[in-house]
Amino acid sequence: MKELTEAQQKAKALLYEPAYASDKDAAVKQAAAAFSEGYKDFLTRCKTEREVAVYAEAALKAAGYQLYDDRKQYAPGEKVYWIHEGKAVLCGTIGSRSMEDGFHLVIAHIDAPRLDIRPNPLYEAAHFSLLKTHYYGGIRKYQWGTMPLAIHGVFTRADGSTVTVQVGEDAGDPVFCITDLLPHLGAEQNKRELSDGIKGEELNILIGSEAVADEEVKEKVKLQTMILLNEKYGITEKDFTRAELEVVPASPARDIGFDRSMVGGYGQDDRVDAYAALMAEIEVKDPAFTTICVLADKEEIGSYGITGMGSTYTFDWLRQLCRMQGADDIRAFRASLCLSADVTAAYDPTWSSAFEPQNGTYAGRGVAFFKYTGSRGKSGANDASAEQMGYLTRMMDAAGVAWQIGELGRIDLGGGGTVATEVAHSGIAVVDIGVPVLSMHSPFEVVSKNDLYMAYRAFSTFIAAKQ
Ligand code: MN
Ligand code: MN
Image (tube, rainbow, N blue to C red):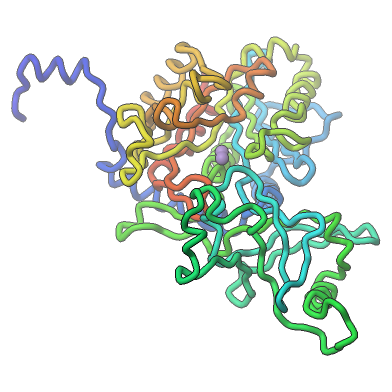
């Protein structure tokens, strides 16, 4: 070993240089690759919040979780779960310490930007059947044209029954699409602002082109489509008015790169953190603090609604847990700590001007902490305290979890928020953390396998903490 000069020793001791830590560790790479196999399967199978809830319930049951009963007292080590309205998941493991010592929560969200089918969607034009959509969450509309799309969701029928729809995922399924102009006739469209490249009213889904053979019928193509839908799902056109149908990219999650070091796929914001959080929760055994994992809905549209974190269901559940243990919920909330697990933008060298390099978060550098999010002077941010950041980062260092810290992008360029504000509003301290994503909110998002694995390790470490 070459001896270090005094200045070199000082540099090592005093300067902080974020690194691609996991890159140098073959064991980490191997573990991350193995962990990602389960993740890709999850991502491919779960393209809506309802599908995540179904997946999670099966996984929780298989791991010995009991359906939560609010009249029952649970013993330390017991595992309970509850599916809220079919679209949000609550689960946890009872700790050995009093709940007044606080909960250790990890909260991620399982809704993702997409195109929802409108209440009166079906129409016929130029011998095509089409569905009108209304986009959900922040999408760049031009990204959704000319790609294979699937339709997932539910119809509630006139007789009160519900039927599940999922078309476009199996190899033998048809898919759907949004059409765009050919370049030869694109001169006018080319002059539009990028945000208007394809407008909201142009996000129409092509679903058929055959007609019934009866010249007397007015909308022959639309009727032919309805006949097929009626045969398959037992629905009439009126049932669209009470349906919940989501249009999502039709392809499976895939490895990216010759080295297979990344995962590409739809809905990784925030299912990448949701999967890591769920796996960490399922694996925790006999924790000191009661652990709580919440996979919430509606984050992408502001956490409103009965399944969003703006609703009281999570905090009501925590209060009920306290009540059955004879613990004071206000004390419990004050002592609790929550990781708001949500993705952030990965620094993109092709779009580097959108970032501040020194405070970017980089794919491959580990799970990313965020002291604050928000926009224009931290507006809307939770802004965690130095003490909480210290507690968590020291814990991660001690456990060998690769982490980084930064901001979303350049100051005043934009910004964003997370469910951290809702958690803080309930009186629970919260810190933002998550996996950096390239092409966030696009139909094909990219994450580093090492970062996914480090998110899982971070959540595992946090919920297993003794102090
Ligand atoms: Mn998110
Ligand atoms: Mn998002």
